[in-house]
Length: 203
View (cartoon, rainbow, N blue to C red):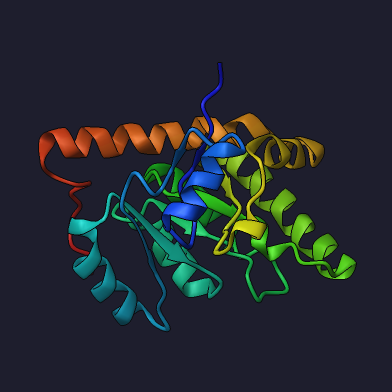
C-alpha cells in the first residue's frame, strides 16, 4: 500500500495535521521539523541556511527570484526549492539549475496553493510545472507536490494531487510518495547519525 507524505504544510497545528491524516496523508511535517526560509539576497539566504539548518529536519527555501533559485539548487543544505516559478513570467528553472538540483539532492516543490481560482493563472502555473517537471525528468532532479495548506479548507487529498500531476504527463506517485520518502529516509539517517545533512560552507 502506498504511503503518502505531505512535508510542506504551512501550519502544523493539531487540527490541520489530524485532518491531513484523515484524508489520506500517512506522514505530515507535523511529525518532522520542516523549516521554511525566504530571502531577498544571497547574503541573507546564506545566513538563514547557516542559522536554520542544524535544527531543521527539512529545510525549504521559498523561491521565485532567479538568482536565489539557482543558489538554492547549488546548496546541498537545502532539501526543497518550493515554487521556483512564483511571481515570474518564466518557470524559474533552467537545465543548469536542474542539473545542480539533481547533484545536490534538492527537490523541486510544486505548491498547489499557487493554483488559485483564476483560470488564466492556473493555466500559466501548470505550463511552468510542465516545463520544470520535464527538466527534472531529463536531468534526474527529484520533485514533490504540496498543498501548501495553512487552513483546513486548503487541504487536498494525496490522490487528488497525484491525479493532477499524472494529468500533465508526469509521475504523481513520485510527487506524493517517492520523493518525500527519499527525503524522510535522509531525515532518519541524519537523526541516527546525530548530524543533519552536513555540507560545506557556501562561498
